[in-house]
Image (cartoon, rainbow, N blue to C red):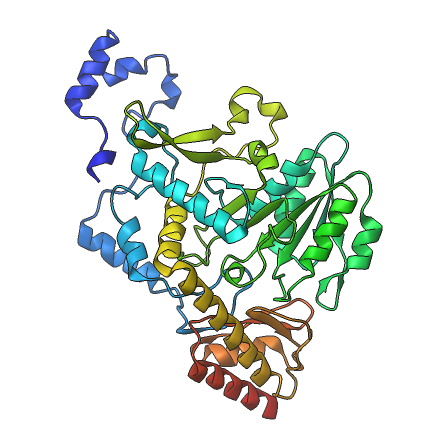
Length: 440
């Protein structure tokens, strides 16, 4: 980590001398005495590398890592090629921050540029930013992009991820704007109800494809209905599903957002993750955060720059539509390396395996008494079943055999998920355990 070492003692002395000072204490002479720690911070003494390793290993040992996972709900277990960690572990890329000195950070800027380009290819949109904190933040920022003086209401599908709903609701509350949930019918957004809710003050409609229950929505029809009323159409997309479904652009979306975790980022007990945002050219200047662009230098060589930086909070903080100023550079690089390693054919194969394995699993689970499919629409790699038994008892039985079952829903159902990582043997073992529970 040589490039991240602090200044040397000689460099510090030189800086102090240029300021006419002789010591660091003199530099802080204007600081109140009560705030100065004369005896240093009250922290334990340092440990050896071996001691630290033992402590961390003991903490990590408390985590329960399941060899078989059938839970998604926004965070998914996918195979990550070894090249991903090999590349992002290089010192050149090992930072989570956007460079402030772009002229000496060409490698990082190029990786961000490649990430943006790949997101545009996945979504079909014209431009993408350098990422935001997570998928929920991306959705909330997209809603903020659509508001103006005459249009301030945001309509969010009731079939969206609950965490996304709460994040959008928090953003709207903080800015004094209104958010309403569109009713759900048969596991998908109720289009008739949406039509009745759209008014002249509606800024946008947010829809997920596939939605939280795994169902595929009539995105094109909803997009057309939204535009008929002059509102913007925002689509939240699963980047793996995007490899085989119509792109947001083909569905008429003005903005496409999503959680980038499926793109080469491990589950990691909940983060850090990655939010991606893409938009039409007309909305490019409203995108929060930053956009890396390609240009040529004074000698005509290919170079990369920070083309747009929405740093509103520096100059008009109280009027800024967004205060996002950073990005998840390391996670974005992970996503770019993953997409490059998989290629179009690899991404398509992953998506197809997810689809077919989830349908096999749904077919087998629905044969078990007490576990009927709740919805009968088209789904990608998640689906909901009813559960006639105590859900926690079911989960405990599965966990005793090293299986993390689906996510228990508040209404008693179970949200199951299958990816390319789930083998037929694993799925059959899961179904066998459910049959045992059913027979007891």
